[in-house]
Image (cartoon, rainbow, N blue to C red; front, side, top):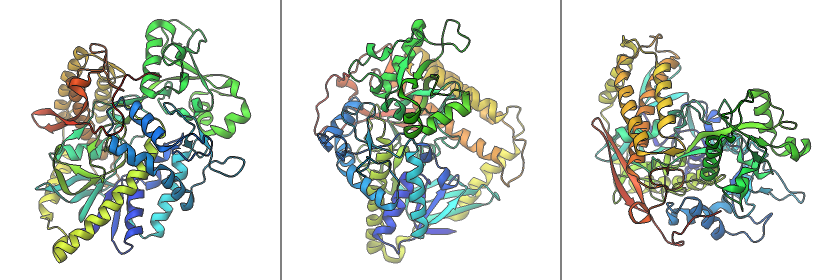
Amino acid sequence: MLEHDVIIIGGGLAGCRAALEIKKLNPSMDVGLVAKTHPIRSHSVAAQGGIAASLQNVDPDDDWKAHAFDTVKGSDYLADQDAVEFLTKEAPEVIIELEHLGVLFSRLEDGRIAQRAFGGHSHKRTCYAADKTGHAMLHELVNNLRRNHVKIYEEWYVMQLILEDNEAKGVVMFNINDGHLEVVRSKAVMFATGGYGRVFNTTSNDYASSGDGLAMTAKAGLPLEDMEFVQFHPTGLYPVGVLISEAVRGEGAYLRNSEGERFMARYAPNQMELAPRDITSRAIVTEIRAGRGINPDGSAGGIYVHLDLTHMGKEKIMSRVPFCWEEAHRLVGVDAVYEPMPVRPTAHYCMGGIPVNTDGRVRINGNQLTEGFFAGGECACVSVHGANRLGSNSLLECVVYGRRVGRSIANYVLDRERLLGDRAMPQIDEQKYLQACEKRIQDLLNKEGDIRIKSLRQNFQDVMTEHCGVFRTQEVMEEGLKQIRQLIAKYEQIFLDDKQRQWNTELVEALELQNIMIVGEMILTSAIQRKESRGAHSREDYPTRDDRNFLQHTLASHSPDGVTVDYMPVVVTMFEPKERKY
């Protein structure tokens, strides 16, 4: 059995920042970090546009309170305001820390960190490294992990959280390269496993974003929070779905319909293209529904709109958003200097996740906390994003709450060691967990059904996209839930061509599909129960926000019999909810 003082699952920004903070506070603490891919291939590396902080480098009138208000308003007042206060107050400090770690931010002429406009923000506060911000940040954090002697397990797939009597004791993980299993025990476990974009058929997320940490948490008997709130980014490159960063609109690009009209004037006349993502995504879908979308063959009944950069000029495009130009050119053959990009909404981000307090401690329910179990980043819900996340607040959450959770874990482990001494390392029946996971793998390898994993996953993703998209109704979602339950039942009829243990990507995909199905059922069930429109959850049968009944967080619990839903209060400390206009 392997053991570490702390084991962190996930090699992206939140997990790396937490590991670094633990080692900074206690260099002798033994920290292990497990990544399904190489850490630098974690999905954080794909974050493009920037990271928000009220540095006041461009706008001297900005401050953390303005940032907090924008965040709470953007969340449609579902964000927990104590968590938002930590996020926005600590933002300038973590940017300077990142700079000192070696992150190469873009600069103003006087050498200060540059800041650009971003959707839903009232000031120019988004720091950036051209349009490769996540890439610049993650590379430096991973380099610093090696310098601080964090043990990195790359290309290991975590199959199970070991949770006994609401205490996290470790994990069971599968070595993708050679197929063997290991139990890792630890005094604290942190999940930083990212999002679940692959629940949907068109997403900006990479193939690894299959909701593994969320599903493992649910299977361990713990609830997930606010799963109905799925962010659809307005500018997914059609037809591939990859992200065209909000930075492009922050630098001045226009959204145009088939008539060449800048249609956002109808939906957000003040913010225009820099309205929050939920509003902009609904506007694009509404334009398409109204017959003002664009079709690649020029016929009626369009399926996308245009993102027009042509007025910006080649020099600005190539210096400020070169990667977005490259993506459009490489993937769909569009030279954005001379022609507009085809875009439509794509599944992008989960506002919900594993419920945690502001120290990253995972909740059992609205009143109780687990022991030794922490979470941070996109897989967690501390709720700084509420019903809708503002662009450039996700990287900020990863580093602010990565740092906070790291501090919390370091202190938790020290307290545990002082209290329990030699008994601080938990006791685990290793063979019980190894045998259960071994049986699960062998059962998959031995299946003799007639359904391929790819086709079942595709059908599931198609149902989720069709029945739980940008616009929703009770009838459509209930039909979707019925269909995905039928697809879940068909999982027993799959078969794998590859029967080997070594580098069996088909086996990993089979394990991921189980997680995708659990997460999808929890999203749909939570969405059916929330009978209002708030942020990214837009119900055509309940078009208004209902604070009297639904100014509260959803807590969904999974079992073999289905999903049950409970609720938890929203923390309101600074800003009373009011109508949201842009």
